[in-house]
Image (cartoon, rainbow, N blue to C red; front, top):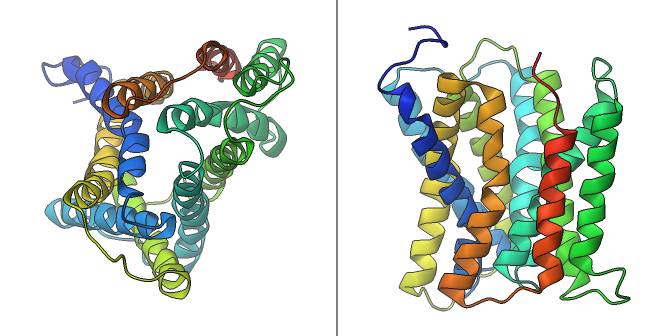
Amino acid sequence: MTRTEITPSTRLWWVRLLALATVWGTSFLLIKVALEAFAPVQISFGRVAAGAVVLLAVVVARRDTLPREPRVWLHLSIAALLLNTMPFTLFGYAEQRISSSLAGICNAATPLFTALLTLVALREERPDLRRVAGLVVGFGGVLLVLDVAGGVVTGDATGVALVLGAALCYALGWIHLRRYVTGTAYSGVALSAGQLLASTAQLAVVTLAVTSPPTTYPWAALGALVALGALGTGFAYVLQYRIIRDVGVTVAATVTYVIPVVAVAAGIVVLGEQLHLHQLLGAAVILAGAWLSRAQPR
């Protein structure tokens, strides 16, 4: 089957896209629930460990192979630090200060950071008026979320900064993957499994060094942690690659615009969180900027 053939299976790509947006969008809610019992670093460790188990099972089922070259593992370890270890932990610390809804909104700045750093780091990318305008609009949306024009920053500025730091880590990680890992002989699932294994090793060391075991293990927090890892980090990776295979990277990237909507809805409906009007308007402006700043398909 070629990528351009339409089959009953590929026609369901939009269902998979919505499922992926739901899984990733509700991850902010799950982090908030897991924080009731676990420290941010412990949540990150449990998340990547459970995700690694899921992806390793897929690798074994497909009779795939993990990378063997030390060079590939070095770059996967760097990617793990930037795409898993640091951002997952930053999300946890951020949601100790801000709502899961606001965290989901601020994470929508990831495409903006990616577009900006891509223009700087990758020579083949050239800025044009449309993409520059998108960056200006998008970062203006961040300021609107913070209500800078009103003279006060609604919510906790440190929490917002932590989420923006996680978004920046994502952007750096994707650029590193594109430059040093893309094009290797290994499948995307095998590379993702190796990446999560590397992150698990990193976070195991940090968790043992800076945290103590929880005193209680509420079922809600345990369930949130397992779902965050098995679904939000393991199953989601497999689903993402399936969508890319079915309809391509450009269409798959539109999940970015649905995740904040799911995060806000989940936070409001499940946790009773509240958002200010300027935060919702800022989210719309951020997404508009991300759409403008995206690279045009060749």
